[in-house]
Image (cartoon, rainbow over all chains, first blue to last red; front, side, top):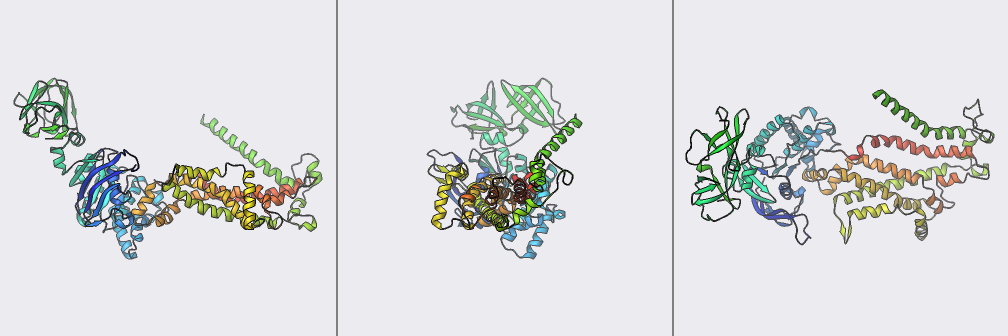
Length: 357
Length: 282
């Protein structure tokens, strides 16, 4: 187990081009020993490249990788002692389930009795104990993925377990249980878990720390709460949360006040550069409330749609030419035409050039 | 409709089966006929329409002094040369194909695909173009009219087939398999031998089948590069021909020479038909 440090890492797959496209733009990051991380971002944002750099499958074109104090940049995968689980099940089709799970231990020449004990333990966690003697080839897709996962879990001494959207092919119920199992494993063995996903719910429920990436850059790293309440960029606001953050172009009317069309709103942010043309107001639909009468920071909107999701209602309305979404309690009666919505000042985030002020 | 479809399906399958099997039946019946039965009009049923005889078959095993051609020696030569050349081609071809599939090679404008094409291009040329270079090559090595010389030439001819089939096969084996093996603690060689190779047996069998077929049926190089000391089956069979074509012994020889291929095809067939070529590991 080790602390993993990425020091000024950048990567391009076309190092010989004069103007290469970077899959990963220059960044420095460190992953604490025993931490539980989620790497979140849309497809093609560089998540997998980052994992492959850590596991040694890809040699970064720039920068260095350290495990604790030890530089591992040019070290081959075999020597890094890292476990990685891919998005699609990878099994050794000619071997049995037992042999598959035992393979990483056999390669590292663990004693037979220890292999047997550990394989049985992991098989039990993954509900594979009845299939140990079956050929891995004949199993279903999710069982195969459990095997892939199991091969990552049999070694207790790994520097980290890297998981690249490992639960994509697994059904929701088992997915939930496995996520909990992974948390337990992390608590018990203090193994660093790095979990790549593009599903924000998965990231929010699994990790202590979430790293959001976009177009080869880390746009924000923090706890699920930070990401939800104070998204550092409009991208994070838009990407995290369901529905996405409400975002409006606005202009500053004073240091603590902005206006959107004819409506003006007080905010707690100090807008120093009030001449900026690229100002945006962002607010989570969870924080918007439905009021009976006008007050500060309220606006009147035309109701477009009210959707009942069982545990909450989602109100979609429009003011000026903007759309606004509010997540409200289910019991609340929503007028069918006009509704007064309040945007609490403490939850209004102001972005200049898409970055939080 | 489904009934009509089933009927048509079976109808064409049976038709095709007859089409394929008819020449074999014809060859079998001809091999048991004598001169009169072959030239006296079409006959099909032994004992009723013609008197079966083993003359056609016995010529194949009698020594030359008794008017036969004795194919036993050439038969084993053919088996030895074909199997050895195929085996070496598969081993070398598989290694080359794995490298071409997994690693990037670049020398100027030449890249992986060009190298693969270079291998295949060996088979694009008409064999006659290669005959003189091969002759000079073997003669300078002192390997004309020898089994080793033939094996060498056949490896050159068969390896492109092995490389071609195996490159395609490895390209369809997900790269993650190798990567997982590396992560699990193998070095690149162990990853190949412990994980990739066991999964590649179907592809190797198919490549092997093609190598054996092309090696076994070659007449041209066997004819040009051997004289008296070493002879292969196809060359020996041609020696049967004389002013009166001996259809009966030619039929027997054809059956004897095609038998090993049929046996090999039956063994490999299940790998061909199950779609196992794809390496389906996901």
